[in-house]
Image 1 (cartoon, rainbow, N blue to C red):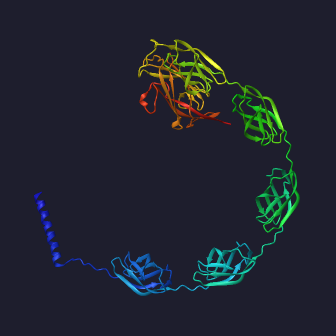
Image 2: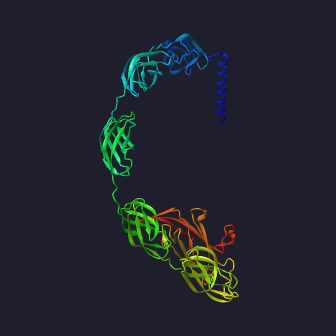
Image 3: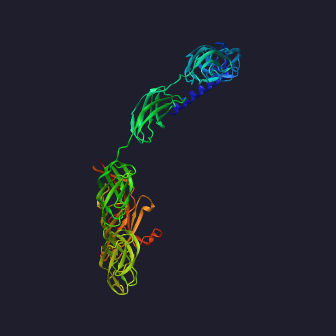
Amino acid sequence: MKQEYGSLSKNISVFLVLILFFLLSGVGSFQVHAAEAPSITKLTPTSGKLEGGEAIYIDGKDFVQGLKVYMGSKEAKLLTYYGATRVKVQAPPGDVPGTVDVKVVNPDGKEAVLANAYTYQAPPELIPGITKINPTSGKLQGGEAIYIDGKDFAHGLKVYMGGKEAKLLTYYGTGRVKVQAPPGDAPGTVDVKVVNPDGKEAVLANAYTYQAPPELIPGITKINPTSGKLEGGEAIYIDGKDFAQGLKVYMGDKEAKLLTYYGATRVKVQAPPGDVPGTVDVKVVNPDGKEAVLANAYTYQAPPELIPGITKINPTSGKLQGGEAIYIDGKDFAQGLKVYMGSKEAKIITYYGTGRVKVEAPPADAPGTVDVKVVNPDGKEATLAAAYTYLADPSPQLTSVTPSSGLLAEEKEVYLLGANLKPDVKVFFGDTQASILAYYTDGYLKVKAPVANTEGTVDITVVNPDGQSYTLKSAFTYRSTPDPNDRVDTPADVGSVQITNVITPSGGGPINYGYGNKWRVDDFVPVTFEGTVADHSGNPLPNEKMTFRFLGHLNSAAVKQMEFITDANGRFAFQMILPAAIGEHVYSLPLATHYYDIVNIEFYEGIYDAAQPSSARKIENVSDRDVYHFSLSIYNP
């Protein structure tokens, strides 16, 4: 191994000595040649247009890739580098006619110049001339397309016919243009003049004739239809000749509204109302005052005599206070009629036509049946005897009282659940009237129990303004001292709330609209919630004051709450009117499509105050956390 390494070192040393020998002796030395300067021998072509654009071939030698070419002071665009002896460039635009130098500059800065090598030619002078125009005449109002033939028409030229400029439609080239004839001032011939942008012009005298418009003498040959209603409005077609645009039409002495001008032989107008039945002349008047009259051409018909009759009304009964929408069917009901139900006029809601009207029932003085009478504006009338029945208001009802007892002087808040309770209802505990603290619905009130002097049970009586009343026997008990058997309400003693029933006009359910079984509630109508409240051991909690919250979606006002107190068995029943539903969800069935919201509901122990939410405790163990808030149904045809 040591012997091989020594032999290798000896060979390297010999190689280095040989290299040093060659360098010192000059043998095998490298020579660097400087690049040659370019030169130009020929240009083809040697002249071109002042606006440039010519393709120029430049021949020479030592042209290097990446060179630049200048013609005068402007750089020419390099089109093709063929090699060291030829390039092709595009001549830049010149500033003035005359000769310029051509220069080639290589990337290393070396250049070649061929003096006065290229000539920019002066553009030829264009002296326009007109040889022909076609057509040579047209309407006085102008608008004709005119072809003008000639020579040396420059781009950007203007054309005048008489003293007015014609609109240039198409520049075909130096030998033809197309223009639109301007309107003439009077019939007759005018010169046609072409003016190039440099001011040079050509005139063809009396080259174009504006024709006088033909004189129109209108005539009427036919109108259709030839008769119509006295109140007018019919569409009338008038045929004839020489009807001028802008004409007017008169039927009798009244102008008819022009609906359509079809042309010189037909127009369509709307008949104006007539004054009396009978025939009238039809007259057409052109804008120049010339007119045509067709005597006794149109007949205004006398309106048919309407003898009204009533065949049916629906519904046939309603509330004593009125307000029901009533449909009345019959015949010959005239626009502007009046309807009476008994002796009182009903408000017209909709006039559908001669066979139907819709009215609003006026309030009645007493329950019972009344005649319905229709009176047309001309005084003719129809009566349907005993057609509508005003129903007596249903009598009030009272089903529960919570709490059902209190101290003599306590003036306890008491919730009454019932039905048909009017806003002005009066409530009596025994013979003493109670103050109404809140009227929630016609089935739910909050009152203040009046002070009593003696212990014992009393009846509660509700009396509506119409005198109808209802008495719930032995409904409230007055005590001088608290009942030792009464439960003492303590904080946080509510363990659970169970909804057992929901009563609503469309049916409370439970029902499944695709998100599981839930109670359904309606908007804008009384909804009753029933259920129970229990402690943490599941025992009923009597006399527990609670709050129910409905978190409607429409807006902040759609959040509603209702207070209630459980009865002696821990049951509750309260009624409230819920706000509008939006209809955020859709549930489709073969017969109808239902729109509804899914609204959260909450129960609180105590009275919830939005300003102090901690004043009441939210109950988490509830049977239901949301309900279907029903908006509307659309029934499929």
